[in-house]
Length: 174
Image 1: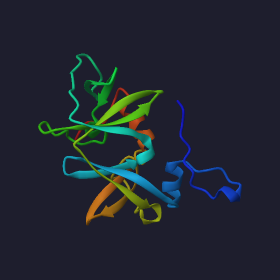
Image 2: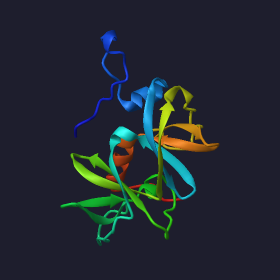
Image 3: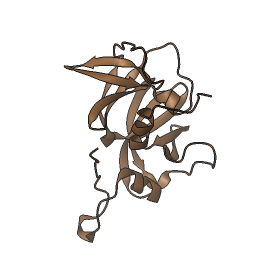
């Protein structure tokens, strides 16, 4: 799997650029993040990890697949797998209502992550991230919390989320 390295350091310093996760953990730099909803909760991922967003893809269920797979949808000439982001994050998926897909790369191919609604791109000062209380969430998935318009948003590591979606066994939804 190829990885993207984001330019977060001073080019004159001679240090290697840090990956998004490293910058978020160090609480250094600024990043454009895409805010989306799952139910009433808000989440965000590094914008550079998202190829595009698709509103209301026509999803076709496929029997016998892993519980993280909602189905497939056509995107241009490609058929993409759509993963159940809510269940991977330990939430119940909203049964009704429109859904959107974040198209990302996972394992060298494009995949879709199902979200309820794509809200906005936000410029986030990573020094404003708050730590996640111990035992509240999986440390691999969640990088921190921030406040936007008076509401709490959970910053998710896109690489870890994609990996969790593609792992056959997932934690049971709450």
